[in-house]
Image 1 (cartoon, rainbow, N blue to C red):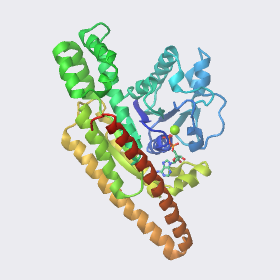
Image 2 (cartoon, helix red, strand yellow):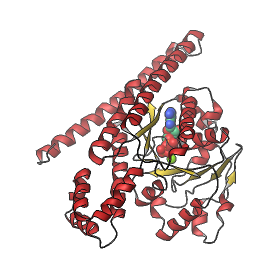
Image 3 (cartoon, helix red, strand yellow):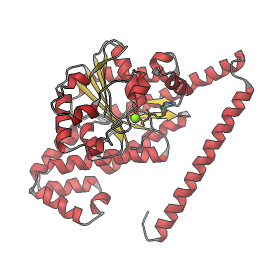
Image 4 (cartoon, helix red, strand yellow):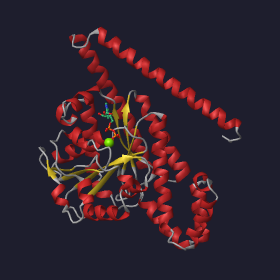
Length: 381
Ligand SMILES: Nc1ncnc2c1ncn2[C@@H]1O[C@H](COP(=O)(O)OP(=O)(O)O)[C@@H](O)[C@H]1O
Ligand SMILES: [Mg+2]
């Protein structure tokens, strides 16, 4: 069973849209898929999937010990696709107890299917990190906006620190060292990871070995969603560089997805986009990612890829960004020439974009202001 956790540093970047549609694309390709909504407290997968209300979900399962997990696995209208609904009654994955987490994890790992897709909540809560680490090849979703890319990097950073912590058993010299750093307040947060690892190697060879072997197998993957322009694809390189320079982790690029108004229409119609408009640029991008998942499904346990492999994944993503953009432009031209899109509507769209640009400008000014303030208070850039 391939476990595919889907996470993000920031909310609203498209995790659930991607989880649902990838699950369908994989099921259509003949894989048996279970899709679980683990974004407790903000569950919305059922809306994207368009399923009818289900009486019980994960919340119910967690609050009544002894419940058989199969009783909350529902068949869907899509052949091969099964769904475990979340629960909006439960305050969030962050709030479940250690015991509940252990029980749920055990039951999830005991399931049998080709793909188990986990739609996780946003952020770096320890429970989310744990579910993300059920696979070495979890997917991080980002959008091109600065806050989203920054949070994607921070998410991976938190994962790496968690791996480091876990690799040092309690009372080991490594753990004692990390604890001494932690006492120093922000030292651990600001620490340069490759240096920390070098220190660990000197102080605690066993823990260092354990950490190294876990980092070697950790191969997170990135999806960049909500592109507006081919240049947005460069944002992925920024996340990659930060991960490489500060964490020593290379990030595979699984693919880009443009922002597409069809998604809104699909959502309102309660039909997933790959079913609503399979030929759309958006649905095609999702199918492309599903194909990549299938074509690399045997590589879960192989050691770290070489740099060339990672470089290729970014080149491919840039090409995809260009290709999809051309398809989108062709489509708009076709709509204009056939009269389906009026000039008035085009003007509306431009106005809307202008508004978004202005919002971004304001955000930019705010960041500049905060940075100037921080510098004046003695923070070194
Ligand atoms: N590529 C896209 N184009 C247009 N809208 C999108 C796209 N991806 C996601 N959305 C929309 O953005 C909103 C947030 O997506 P969602 O999947 O719920 O994010 P998350 O699960 O990360 O919080 C939803 O309304 C969704 O329909
Ligand atoms: Mg979601």
